Length: 221
Image 1 (cartoon, one colour):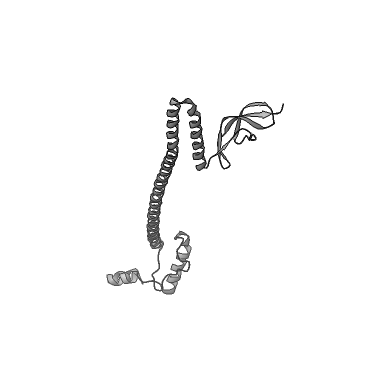
Image 2: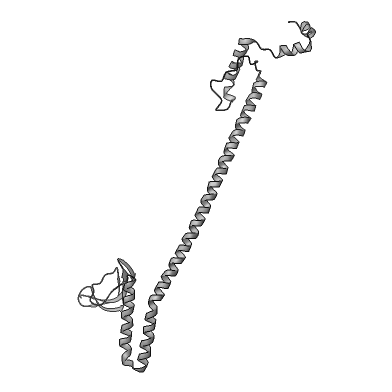
């Protein structure tokens, strides 16, 4: 069709001709253009994509616009997914932080309660000892000869309380010296490795030394 013939055609016909395409050859060209520009498409663009039959041939500008729109749509979808994942992670983190804070508070309260109960138990066990000391001093002020028996009774009661708490005395005279539970403050000549005098009685709880005994140890010259 010549330029004069095109100009003679009504405007509506010219528009109709502009949107027509070249049949199978045009479709092949469009598919070839998509293949050539596939490197510019998103990673998840279908590998087997074909231009629909009857679709008009695209020039480079139109193809670029289509690619840009598809990229924007996919970026927007991915941004929404990331935003949702971020919100979910924040919610999970908030719940974990709240759970940990509750656990920390409960643990601190449990420790405080245990300490209070331990102190109360020890004080309750020692109260009778205080009463015995008071009575021994009262009796000793009237008759000093009664002071020693009174203090011996107090000592026996204290050892009984310690035994009830799981403490065992160690470092008494005649025991073999053991550096795990005994501290030698003096060494004298005598039978090798025996405790001959106790300055301070030691205590152990099972295999653990609570307080080492301070003793005098004999050693062969």
